[in-house]
Image (tube, helix red, strand yellow):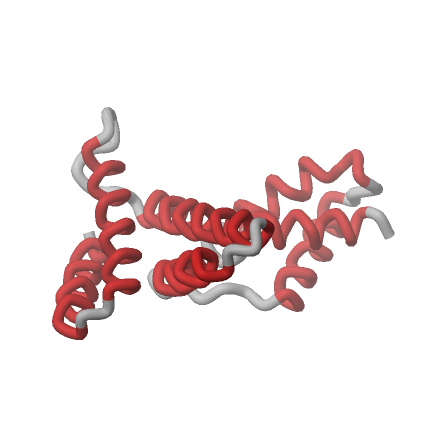
Length: 150
C-alpha cells in the first residue's frame, strides 16, 4: 500500500504544479494499480514484487510506443512517452548498471556451468529472479546472449 500512498502524494504535487505530463503518467500508474487490486483473486493489496512487475510493464509499454513513434518520424509523440517512462521509473528500486548486470550474469554462468546458447533458459531464469525489479529483462537478455556466445 506504500506505493499507492506515495502515488497519491505525488499526484497532489503534480496537480498543484500543473505538470500535465507527470500527472498523466501518475494517473496511469494509479489506474493500473487499482485495476490489479480489483482483479479476480488479487486480494486487497499487491505484493512488492507485483508492484515492481506492474511498473516495469508500464515502462515497457511507454518505451515500445516511443520506438514506434520514432520509426514513423513522430518525435512530437515519442517525447511525451519517454518522459512518462522516466516518471514511472522513479517508483522502481534503483536500477543496476550494465557492469553490475554483467558481473551477476557471469557468476550465474559459472555457478551452473553453462555452455553456449543451449543453456540460455537456465541462465535467464536465475538472472531474472536475482535481478527482479533492478534490471530490465531486455538488458539482461542481451547480456546473457553476449556472454553465452563467447
